[in-house]
Image 1 (cartoon, rainbow, N blue to C red):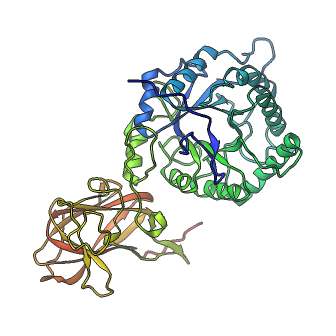
Image 2 (cartoon, rainbow, N blue to C red; image 1 turned 180 degrees about the horizontal axis):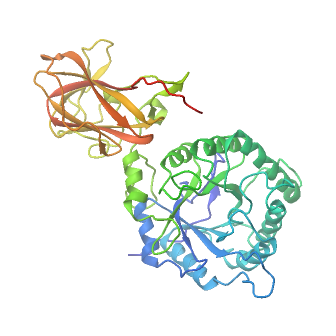
Length: 491
């Protein structure tokens, strides 16, 4: 296979939310390490291009807390392996984010080691236009403000300032990612990060409100997807670009759970680049990104999509209507899970035949709505008017990306009409939730009734799929409502 050209420098996008590639696409990728092991082989790095990625995160070397004491390990020890990763990503047309790893010393740093690392590496890859520099992985336990006298350990902002100046001396054009907060959450977290940003700006640019041109805040997802999203939104509002450089499913400390689908959905919505904590084989301390259960199946079952630089996965698809955002289920009000979510059948996901629906003929019979899609849509005779999907026959299916805010038992209702009894099967996130469901015969295609089944739904982004096992029937809408149980719910 012919090698791809070296990528042009990443730049901040027009919205100033993040760094994007030379084609304007956000950077997305898994990680690899040369801290203790040999560089990942070329063919394994190449495989990430088939997984929708255009970037790689490299934990280059692990700092030694005892440096420069006798017997400590000096920076530069993995140069031969790092060179290989730089070369392989260049040849493959991938971006590369290089950082200092922590080993068993997360939430810590050695300022002298960091300075000497960048004195060694900043000039070495300065002309490599596909490379970005991330100053230091998780240098403080665990979040902002690093500038506080009670930060553990203190002095990280001074270290960032020193390193930034070193990088700019040797690599004036390389994008720089700052801080790399492990836990970055809520409006409070954003306010604390702004203290660090202002201290950095004042020292480096002489103006605490400096506008960045080639910098962004790196952060990790260990405050959980909801709190992290709020913090990122606040920082973007304040005008500072962001870049997610490590996160995984499962709460802080609970072990790995593959891709964090919920946070990925939010980062895509906000236009923020992301590097996930699944590794390129053969080695890593988390999950193998090439195993579907840790990455590709999670993307597919949730309906996540983005535009890949290489290949045609993930398939282009998305929510139709609703501002392109997944329709959400019930929320807690006064300790009751309440609220009915109605999805109009004709608002199936966009993406086309075989991706977001399957229709046995390519024509929209009826043609009353979304005429360019193959699904058959007509004006409805049901109360409330609007449209319904008609002429549903055996083997056809429809998909809707939803987000279940809270797990639990729900009533799943289908508004149907048909002469003879039809059968459907409904799955959520690729899991069968109904088995074979016999729909009632209503006596005619203009006579409507509501069929209801109880289903248990897990939380999160997921594709709802209605499979027609035998036709023919019409479908007007789908409803999900929580089965009302009183809960002592703690926010």
